[in-house]
Image (cartoon, rainbow, N blue to C red; front, top):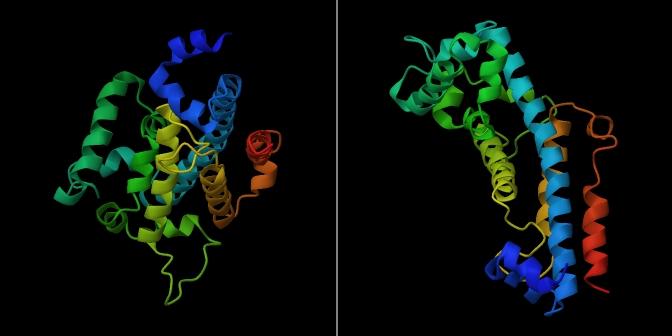
Length: 230
């Protein structure tokens, strides 16, 4: 495809950053755009695996505490999220219950909750309402020190980084540049990828076995770095 056609479809505004990063080489700009899409696809696969494992770990923890229908029960009158500080969580759950209607099952309700919902279970109000036990899903989490407290707030902030990456990909934002610059750099992608692997390890999940045949992040990052530094 000619660059003029590609740019017309994708928009000049969107392509400008890729063109600048490629030193106005239109062929390289199109290649970079495609490689960014490839990297985004690879990252989203890893994020999706983490999200499911993370959600299921929370479900297992709270099922052992509050029973097999714990999520719906949290939003009932007298439930653990039936408090002013947890009002938003309660509203999200009740909205999903109404949406599911007669199709309701606990498993389907779990699937209706997005990554942000699970992340916010580590925010102060929800974490305390849930009995302050959710850190148990990270049995291999480092022990806190005076320098770093590996508490629920720390986990909440780490999860925000993954959520931010997830949203960037979902909104078709690039992940192959230095932040706010037209400079090719895969550090952002690599750092967030390594964070996900770290959290898998904290959960005692063998990430190498889990992601076997799915994980090509390093390879794609190396391709981008090598191609555009040549």
